[in-house]
Figure (cartoon, rainbow, N blue to C red):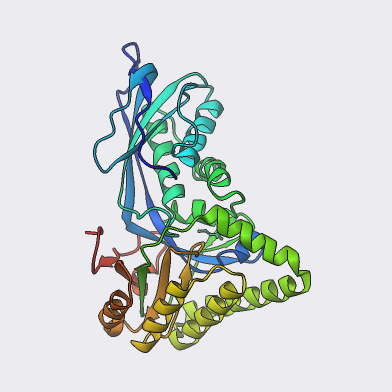
Length: 348
Ligand code: MEV
C-alpha cells in the first residue's frame, strides 16, 4: 500500500442518494500456516477487532481535489485520471464492486482512518479493502453478503500480494478465530486459557516480495518443498487439537517448529529471531513470526500472568509496540472476541 495521496476530483453536485457511506474492518493475526497456506495447507488465524480501519465514501467526479486529513489515507475509485498504484488493492476491490453493481463510470472518493500498522503482517491491505467496499456499498444503498465481500477483498489482495490465499480477506472480516483451507473458513473451537502477545518489529515487510521468494525456494527443490508442506500440515492439525484441549505447552512447541519452517523458507530475519528468543527467555511457551515476515510482527504464546513480562522483554529486545490478546476472548465466533490490550503504541 502506498502513502496518502491527493488526487484530482470534483465533488459531485448532482449526486442523489446518501451523501456518504461508512464501513469498517479489523486487523488479523495468523497463528500458524502463513506462506504454506498459499501452497495448499490449512492455516489458523484470529481477528484483532480493536485494531480497525474506518472508511467514509462520498460521490466524486473528475477534476476536483480529494482532501485527505492528516493521518488518514484516501483514494478515488473509478476515476480514469487517478494516479497509478495508490492504495491499489482497496481501489481495485471497490472498482470491481462498482462493476458488479452496474455502476461503472461512478466515481467514489474514499477516506480511511487506520489503526492497523501498515505492512506489518496484520492485514492492513485486506482490512482497508473491506472497509472501503462496505463504505461504497453503504453510499449506494447496496447490501453485500459475506461471500461477495470476501471475493471483492480478494480481488484487491491478488493485486497487493501477487498471489493471495484468501486467509487475510477471511480473517479481517471474521468475528472469531478461523481455520482456513483452500478458500473456505470454518469457525475454530478454542479451549485455551493463555495470552498471545504480538510484537511489532517496526520494519515494514512486503507480502508480495515474501510470497514470491517462498515460491522460488519451493520451486527450487520440490522434494524439500513436499517435506516442508507435509510437516506444516501436521503441525497445523496438532495446533487445532491443542487449541481445543487447551494444551499451551504443546501449542508453544508447534509455534517454534513452524518458525523453523518459516526460517527455512527464507522469511525470518535476525530481528525476528531476536524477538523470538527474547520471548522464550521471558517465559513464553513459544513464538514465531506472524504474516508474511521479512519484518512485520512476532507472535508469542504465554501464561496470562506472564504476558506483561513477555511484552516488556519484547520491547527491550527492540519491538516498537506490543499488544496482548487473551485467548479466552477468542472462544466464540458468534460474538466479537474480547479486545486486545495495548502496552505501547497506537491501540487504545
Ligand atoms: C499474509 O498475511 C499471509 C501469506 O500467507 C500470504 C497469503 O496467504 O495470501 C504470506
